[in-house]
Length: 466
Image (tube, rainbow, N blue to C red; front, top):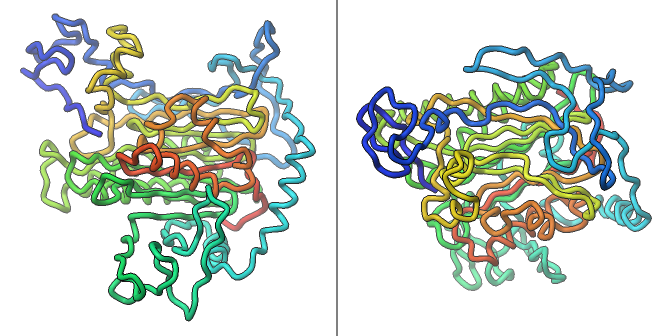
């Protein structure tokens, strides 16, 4: 992806290149709203994710008292525009939603599949599962273990070749062991670097990141974690960042941002901070972490400083909260695929801006070569960062997909994402993330690919320590 630079006095319009004055709010030639470039949608209130019967009016219910055992979240305070979490309330802002609060019952087939999955949880002889179990014992979970090289392609029914004599098996021949120099002793194939392919699963959340087929390194990063809310119930966190390839040290930017956002969320949620407020603070912390890289590397803020995008999701009780800056996305896919899926985020991109300003149709904007140029990012040369956050109350089981454009370029519409996501994603989040990455690689793998999958409600619930 590329960036659109911040306009300054004497700069040109980013749409038509017309010279601008320092006090211009609109371009005199094409009418582009220059102030809107930095404004963005900001924070949004809580809305319900559900489907009303055809022809039924959608009511806006009164605020309900928290159910027994749930967290009674305090209202997020209204503050000024530079730091403005929005109070949580019910609403019906998404097309085709209501607030009935009635979850769809599982079918008999789904129940049997869930029971079978539970029976496989003990899956012996796989060191990857043992590592995942150890990671799940603590909340942080931001170390990236390499995927076990002997694991078979999840889209194929071929079992992995067992390792012999200890050590890692070759990802190419699956027979030889990998020596200390990173080469297979059997076929001589060089093994991938640690960040070329990363996988992690922590019970109710899993993520996979891959370098793709065209990039020389992986500039994406992720963090997945679990923590306890004040009432002892579990909160699940996923953060996905995409380094801006045209910037300096994008791989460092994405790694710093994902770790900073994750650590901030893990510190705030156990204190009872509302998830939308915690998400807002986490994005600001990630921005600060990326900004600090410019100073450490001696890069001036206006000279191609390290930069990345960020998207994050938190599931806490009945609340799903997303936050983002840039064009990485979050999708909602219900388990009942007859119900509509939805994209939960709005891109900070040139194409989205053209459509929002009424200058182009969506088809025209996304057909333009400038479509994916981002207008918002984390970095020292970015605008004043104003995080976008939104909270949702799904009324039925589903799956949240959080991903970089390396995936959604191959499944852009919510309906396309739903078709690619396996039907058993709620029971097998890691397998589903692997399949989604495989879909992007099969489509050409032109970019780094990173995706996190979070079942709602979490499939592996239970109390965890703070």
